[in-house]
Image (cartoon, rainbow, N blue to C red; front, side, top):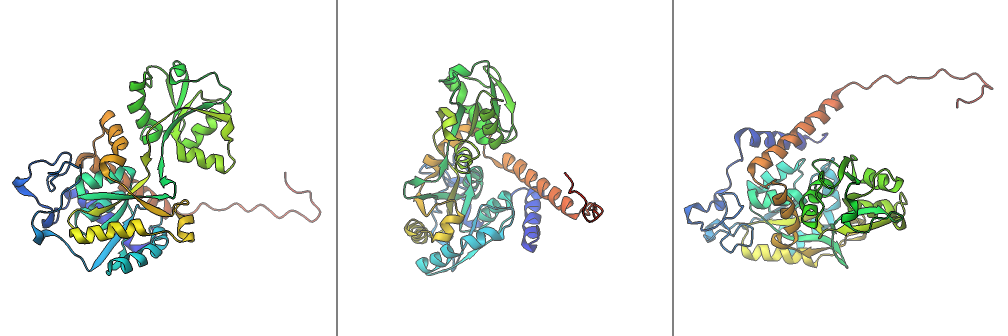
Length: 368
């Protein structure tokens, strides 16, 4: 990464991994008085069993910061979303009467740890990291992006060619079905979680062929290389919109319940009045045109809860025995660090010399 903060945050993530999670802020500690915490880390309680951390019972442990610190799910260049969310942060500051700033993070692990350690007050997490943030960092999801029609989401859709004989999932027994990659939620884990209950077990009832990506699965079905493929609906829809494939060439045999694409969450220990104000500020806001274009046509925030909107995400995790706990988080964080190390190593390699073809003499025929 070319930003100095990137290296600092990656280093902090490495420290988290080498020492275990940094201690949660004192305001999060619940002690032996906790009667129920479900899947939450021992630093948090869930007495009302809504699957997210309760606010501290001791008023002295509630926070009312003068500056609200916000971040969004990390991307290749952390400055990208800082620019895109600037209009919203200006509004959030006016709406709450506090200063609102953007905190750049370069990995999902660093983002989760920043909320757990108290450095973040509000954050937009990706689908899977939202569950880690809830269980390990005391995050309380309350909103998702969307438009006038509803919140942004994607579904797992099982597609086949429209001219194929397949009409139900059962018709795919003995066929070649493209999954995307072993770690993909919608392209592999979700099908393995959902299909057995529908009478179609991957590997047993059909041959799994890994395509390497959702777009490759779509193109493979379109070309007849695969009989069917479970893919993320938003990827397929974008391919149709770009003219890469025609929607009428496909038939959808099955689709899942919606998966949220990302969620916005509050730190659990903010004063209730501030938390309520921030929620209302989010729900009242309408994105300016440029921000809406940058964020995929979404123009507003919709209310959401972890118990409801993330139910299909948890169902997949449960079905494939992939809990959102500290061990799984550490494994994902290590993968992020390793991937970043590979990128840095590649960036430091000298560029291969460029071959310059000799100049063709005047009047020579162009190369073919």
